[in-house]
Image (cartoon, rainbow, N blue to C red; front, side, top):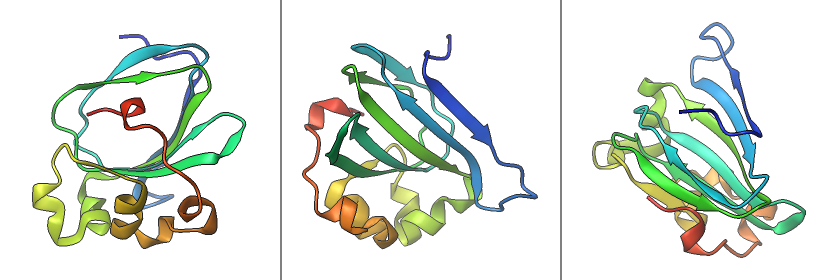
Length: 134
């Protein structure tokens, strides 16, 4: 499967960070859909519409174990931090055992990871649910 045009990723070595595996971003150049392959990792993500600061939404994913498809429009974007496999518990705490294939968005993501609750995140309205599907 080809990597979508516009996707970028920076791998972080264990010497640089014991918690972060990679930092990635993607801004869709056109309407489309993509299959997200399972990697067993948890991600902290900011989802947005290009040029619309009021569209930022926090997203926290549990360990992905099955592929899933997402649909997007031109200008939809994501910036994410992929955690190392053993660091998912830092995000989900005692819920990590039940977090497999879960996605928390908006206020639910901020409740899980309060550090995501900056003024930018908590004062914005969420994107339509159909934009990020699991």
